[in-house]
Structure formats: C-alpha cells, structure tokens
Amino acid sequence: MKSSAPGKIILFGEHAVVYGRPALAVPVTQVHADVEVSGSSRTGIWIDAPGIDLHAEVNSIPSDHPVASVIHNLLFISRISPFPSLDIKITSSIPVASGLGSGAAVTVALTRALSSHLNYLMADEEVNSFAYEIEKLHHGTPSGVDNTVVTYAKPVYFVKGQPIETFAVGDPFTIVIGDTGISAPTKESVGDVRKLWESDEAKWEKVFDEVGEIVKQARKAIESGKMKELGALMNQNHLLLQEMTVSSPELDNLISVARKAGALGAKLSGGGRGGNMIALVEKEKAPDISKALLYAGAARTIITTVTTA
Image (cartoon, helix red, strand yellow):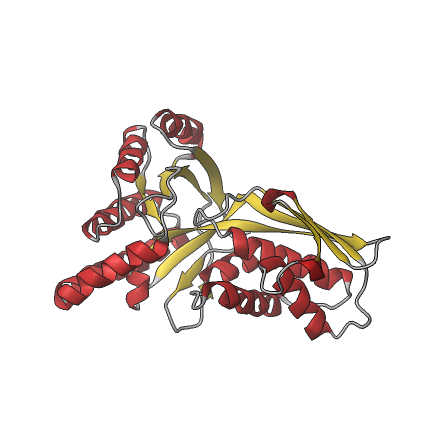
C-alpha cells in the first residue's frame, strides 16, 4: 500500500499568529513524503528510511521516535493482534527542518499507508486529528497548521484556538521558494518578538493588527484570483516582519532579487532569520526568477503552483 503527502509553506501571518491574529498556509505539492507498506518475510516491523539513515526493526528504536510513535499508536487504536510482519519504506523530497512541514508529511503518508494496509479505514478528519496528536508528542504545542495543510492538501486559514478553515483558490498561482541555506531555530525569533512585545505592548499590538488585516485581505485576493493585489500584500507583510527584527540580510537580499527579476511580491516565510523566502510570480517567469535566486546565493529553489486540488 502506497501513500504520499505534500509539504507546506506559510504565506502570511507568521509571528503575529502567536498573538491571536490569523495566518495563511498552503500545500507545496512539488515536494512530498512517500510511504510504501507491504507484508514482510521477516518477523517484525522493518523500517527503511534512507533519508534519515534509519534501517531498523521498530522495537529497536526509541518508542518516542516520530516514525515509531505513528506505528505504535496506530497499531494500538486499530486493535490489530497479533502485530503483523511488515516492510515500511519511507522516502521524502521535502528538505528537513526548513519550515516545509517535513515531519507532518511523513506522519500523514505513513498513517494513510499503514491504516490502508491494515484495512483500518480512516477519514481525512481522523488522519488529521491523529497526525496532530503525533505532532504534539514532538513539538509540545503545535498550531495544527502543518498537519491540516498536509492532510487536506488545501490552503488553510488559521487563528489560534479556533477551528482551522480550508478555503478555495480562485485562480491557480505560482510561488518560487528560495532557501537561504541558513537554519534558524524558530524558538529564538519567537522569543525575541516576545521581548519586543513585552517592552511596548500597545505598539506591537498595532503591528500585529496590521498583519491580521493583511492576512484577511490576502485570503480574499486568493479566493477571487487577484494576484497583483496578493503580491502587494506580501510586500507589506514583509515590511512588518522586518520591523519585528525577524528578517536577515540574506533573506532581504533574495527578496530584493526576486522583485527586481519581476516577482509580483516577495517576503520571508516561517520563523525568519534564515530558512525560506517566497515570491509570487507569473508562471512563465518562474524559471528565470528561480535562476536569479540561485545566482544570488539561494541554496535551492522550489517552484510550486497552488490550486484547490
């Protein structure tokens, strides 16, 4: 049994989302995690995941390992007994620890492939809530955005503490993702924004309000297919992220290069201080803008088209 799940990027609203404002995230179907589950001639459940150098029987790895926890928990809720002998092959083209939802994609693909093989049918809502529980084991208090975007492969509108909404895309649009190649722990940038907010709550609440308004307008622009408007909103959102001190010279450079090469808009995506930037582009200009980013120092680029699936 085979299953696949896409990556994801945050389009708008990072950081302000921590303070109760909305955020938008979309699937990145050009990269994906793929899982194949089959019966094994060996006794036990054998995992072959070359991307993370994991080749082992499930009981020989720590039970809190992300892959092991999916298998243990799914076997428990499906009440399969005795445990079957399985070969599980996991591959992924999603860069790890880059804000592209690699962990959630592996969890969702593995959950679907394993549950199908066991004839334990799970609706999308069940896959999503199961994946969220797994995310909680590894990230403490995740937003739920990653697992939802990845499970439904649809754009998501998210406000902390409220049910996550999926929504439709008026016209497909193309994004070029540029990776600075710099890994930056999100915890640090989130902590620094917290310090700014604590030093002047009134000022930063206004900034977060501005971001929230941009996110609402961006959702409307996506639903009605107004791409020029969407690009301008990206630029506005990036200015506010710069004000929050979460950009970096490398991100700003790639964003400037993308705009000069003809992008409709560009901003950082995710925690900032490194990681990825995104550029909204006309489809035919995507290869040239991708080349310009690589020439300017991007470690890699991904071109993805966002549709309603």
